[in-house]
Length: 202
Image (cartoon, rainbow, N blue to C red; front, side, top):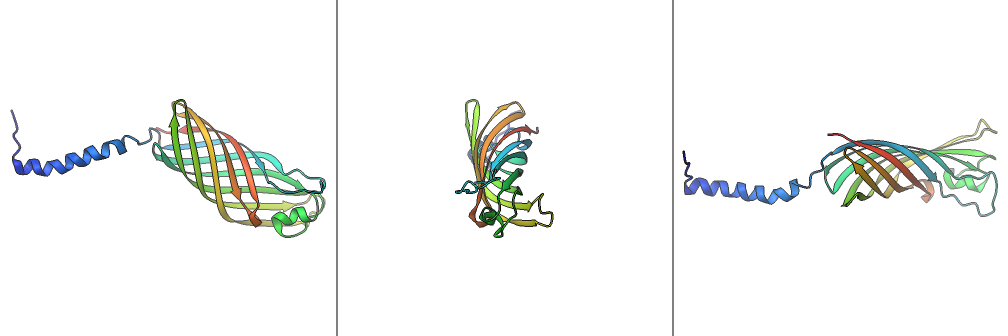
């Protein structure tokens, strides 16, 4: 049986066909595994100045990172992450002022964390994906001293953050390395290098 479309019916179908053809390249860019979760280790640098070499002073430490994201398109997605930036050990006086606008006792310890949301752009190359992101972070920094139990300070706020990195994939598993910079109190910045394993859901 052969069906013959009349001119009026054909003219109605033509816009639908053209729209389908126009959307085909865009739909073809949809990500194969749009939802992902991951975890990894982080190494953070609080980037504090210590021009006089006062001690004890150690402003970098290791921590951990958790992340989850949605990547509806091959080149564009959004992700959220939580980073534990580890501890920094600071001498008294001005070095603590950089974070809390208040003096700290000797051997004060600082603990930082951040919760961030990033729109993320991807560039897919043979064997590797490059990505860059910029977004907002809610950070929190706590200070205490084992020598002075009464010393307890806290600072928190919301600022910008950005990151760049690369990842390689095998089926639903990816390994990612990235560097992120978090703006925190008084224009201080925390730089974080992380290595994460990511699982992409079907």
